[in-house]
Image 1 (cartoon, rainbow, N blue to C red):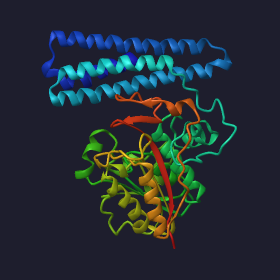
Image 2: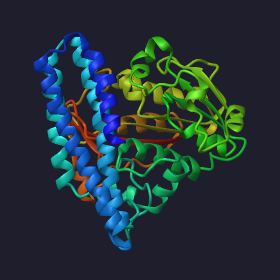
Image 3: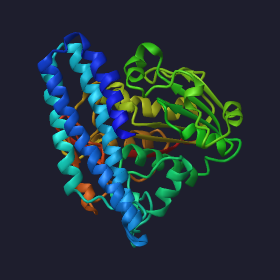
Image 4: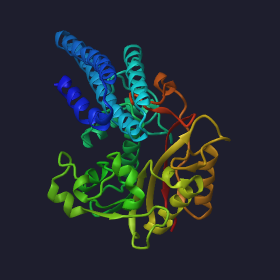
Length: 388
């Protein structure tokens, strides 16, 4: 089946993007890439056979290893498609070939040499769940992480985006926001499944994305829902209940309309770093609290956090990276305006995976730290309660 998927990818994605420029030499290089990809598929097949032959005590771990390889193959496929489309747009066949080959060559050694402990196998004996403000490998090992992933119908993975979703669910639930009759507002919902989970729990949700003229990039990458049906996860909630409790609208996060007001809570997952500048994102957080929430309402936001420097960073552009001093300044501003903010604490590096940095082209497993514009970045979360 995996070989069929690869051949379909080759035919429908790669060939379609560059079909006007295929030559015998080019086709030979494509076959070389296919051979590398099929070798990776062979590794997955061998892992599955090993799992099937393993003892009961070993089988779960080996199946996990096989699934990691399968997931890597899927990530490679998505990466190849993106690289192909970008290079085709530039008319640069050499860039395409060079990048795809390098990506596959880089992926395989990582899979062979990096031990990634199965989530749920070992539980930390100290510390509490989500006690830090930044993404930490220890959180993934806590039973509560797997329980929330199960509610979201996703496989627990060492990925910071998943950490953000779990962070939001955990803290909103801790503050009694996810109960019947509450009203929640999400900014930049993308295609996330949190609205389905919250609707299942009786919450009324208004899901928003950027207007089409702003969100075109996200739509092209498959990270943008333009209608309500795109957000309904029927493995989490019945479709009828979802449509009764969830509605959809567009919202410019740089200019929140007065119609978005009176909510018990709001949230966003790695969105406000895309508003054009550090200051634009900070202004959004303040506005999300003061414009949309009832007194006592809760805002939960995650964003990019710079682990490399408290001085230099990316301050403007399509993606910015917040330093510790930026977050601390925002917290001081919010508190001075009468709002409560949970203590901000950068997680100490407690686990070997906290020292692993995913570099472009991202392999995505694990993906707790990444090299972003030359800075080591991770996710950070903020919990804010509007003052009375």
